[in-house]
Length: 216
Image (cartoon, rainbow, N blue to C red; front, side, top):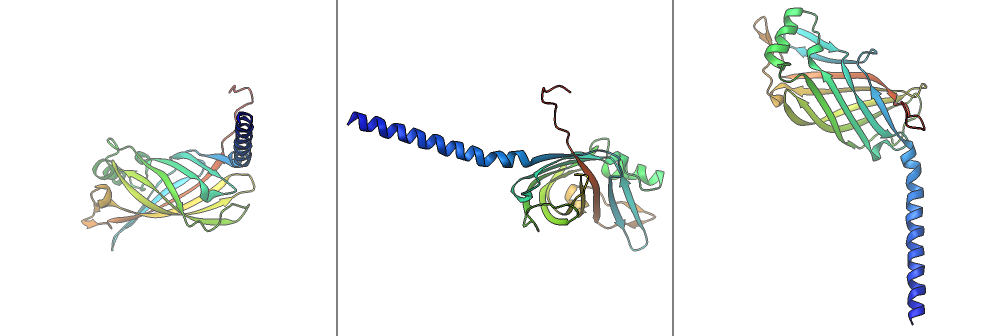
């Protein structure tokens, strides 16, 4: 009886070991496919907002966007982490005095110098993978932190894998100033719309792999 028990226990351990080995083996390809892309300031990357009023419209633009995108290129919907940061003090509306008003009276960049977006999920992706030259649309949900106020934000994103291995990302989304406790800009006695349209356009590069010996 004792011999049978030991034999059964041994078989169980072997079976569990095989199951764990199989699980690990199936996970390895997914881990290997996971990639990190880096977004750097400049490099023709832009963040643009458009402010409209019945008799006045202007744009604010900056190229000071940075961050990372982590995902499995072959199965984007299973895990995407987007972390982006924008230097608000660098926004240029084309007029120096207007820039000063935006920074000091509305965005208060001395207190809240950056806006950040951190993704939490991807909803109903148009495709589960990326192929070179094909634009794919995604709805990315995340936390948008602007003016010290965090709100959930849905962002429509178009991603294209380039032949170079980089990815081109374009995203457009509305920002309600009241949601972030920002006073509505007023110029020439005309108040602009409460909702501003923001467009983000950038190219992210694959993060270089560290040397095998771990040195820089």
